[in-house]
Amino acid sequence: METLLEILKYTVPAFIVFVSCFFILKKFMDNEYRKQMLELRKTNQNYTTPLRLQAYERMILFLERVSLNNLVSRVSKSGMSAKQLQSDLIITIRTEFEHNLSQQIYVSSNAWEAVKLSKEEVIKVINIAATQLKDEAKGVELNQKIFEILLKLEVSPTQSAINQIKKEVRQLF
Image (tube, rainbow, N blue to C red; front, side, top):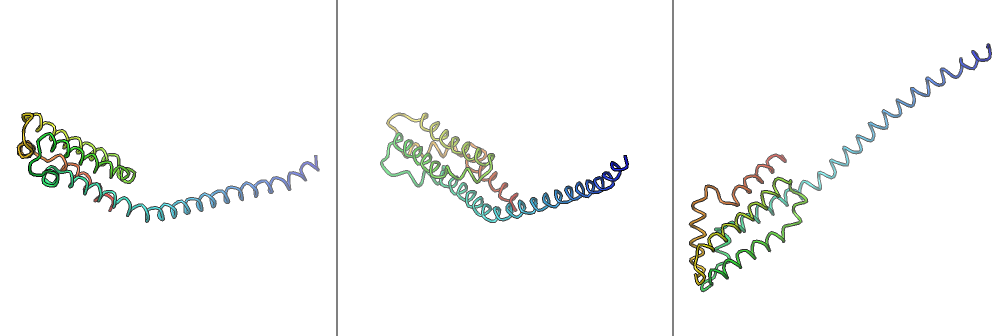
């Protein structure tokens, strides 16, 4: 019995010291890990923030380029038929959109959905205007019809997406 007490006299304090050291080291290692992760995030943010801002800029540029006012004036040529103009407008929108597809990685899901919805709304306005014309209509008539529909809308299809993107960019800072 005496030997057991002698053994316990040495092992219990050693065990207590071991457990104490273990928890102190664990806490220290956890704190170091958190510090490293924070530093890594900070470093990544220094690289990703400019990329995100650039993506938001590109989304605004896309929306401005496909806004009906800018798009019609850029694509419309004299002597075009309404069908040809409709086709060219939609092709231009889709090409611009495909060119900016990779930007969805850097913008929020809400912003990306707003951009997609805006694109679809612009195409919808063009198609609605085209269905209200005769088959042999000229491009000028389609232009007029598009602007008539645009004037009836409270907010242009691209403006609401632009406003949402601006709001998100303000939240970044």
